[in-house]
Image 1 (cartoon, rainbow, N blue to C red):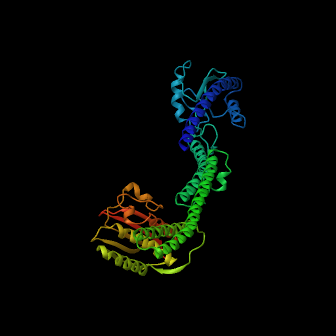
Image 2 (cartoon, rainbow, N blue to C red):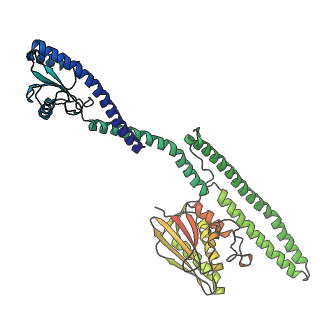
Image 3 (cartoon, one colour):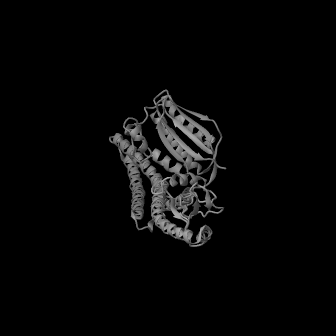
Length: 446
């Protein structure tokens, strides 16, 4: 926009200047001829002193613009001599041939004659930017046009810059609001909405903002309905499971041993269903609960050491070791049992998929007021296109997770929900040396 303004100002100024100059030159040529005839008549009738008096009167308000001079044939200046050196040579050359005076743009001269027959030159100098004098008006015709042009360009650039900045702010404000709301929605905050200023607009951006709010509202209802469904179904399953356990106990008491294997299988499946229902309820509570967490100081070094000790005891049967490397001490605020459950789920998941005679490495460090927990196994890793789905409920990766290895794909979902409740982040990725590495970032208590 600034480039367009500058180009328009420059071209317009030069076109305007050229048009004005040509028009003025035509006007001055006609006026000069009339004044030259009048000057000749005065010179012939009253003499040179009367002509000089008349020329003094012309320099007053309303007179002929520019400079009026009287030259003798030899180039001597008889009137208006200041600044006439450049015209002297022109007059001398022009005097050689009165019928064909040398043309000079902006300079008009005509011969005039006295009563005795002596001739003189009546000259009007209308060249722009060359009029002598102690004072010049900035916007007056005949002054140097460059300062005026620079001033006009500066004003145009300033005004256009302010207008364009205000216009850009007006156009991009709803885009920034929409981008902010989109980021909130992508992070799992289904209450994200666009600001009301954008909703009041009548253009396409306003329509897009209103469409986004309707979409976010529908997604929020679907998410709430899904969470309520999982919570209600899981809760309702508790009662029949409890009755199945009672019935199984009675059946085992009355059995004479012929259905022992079948009853054991039923008992195993009941425990599996009970564990599944418990985990489903945990996920539903973490994702849907609006209650604030209990706030207590948690020593992460002690928590991780305890989790690693318990997990190592479980892994001894398969010669698996959980190694703990605490580089920095860290205190965080939150629910100790919930945070321990999150870390424990990740460590046990790593222990489950690391091969025999290998170790799971758990490290704790502090960087820029954040505690960073890294849990790395020596397993086969996860396909790159499956990593983003690891923390979703019921997600299993065929190469690393199947029903035979245990779990329902809920452990990492529970851990992710618990970390988010503590205002932290969790992510997974394949390590360069092989295996899956899960990174937990938590804010350190200040």
